[in-house]
Image 1 (spheres, rainbow, N blue to C red):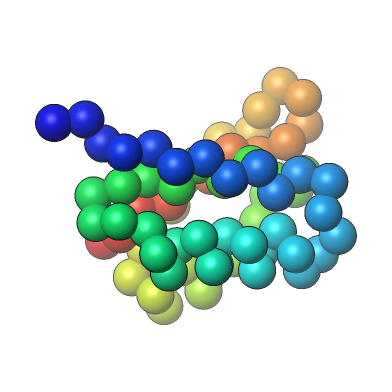
Image 2 (cartoon, rainbow, N blue to C red):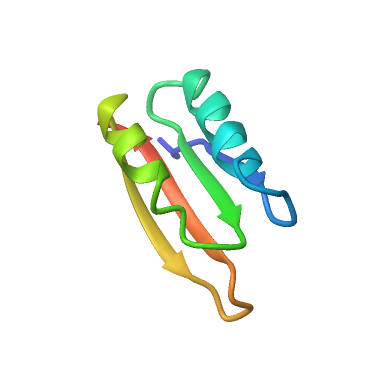
Length: 74
């Protein structure tokens, strides 16, 4: 069974908009799905909030300077 991938592009938004959009998206993230969030910066302030809510994450720097964070329910 394939994992559902939901993409969210939060590039070009002023802080704290990217973090707010990502937190809104994870509240409705289906079980087993992965949220792929693109941001201009590494979302360091987001990590503790995701952990508190029971999510795991992995951020990968992209060649264009943006960051791609994969977020899943624990």
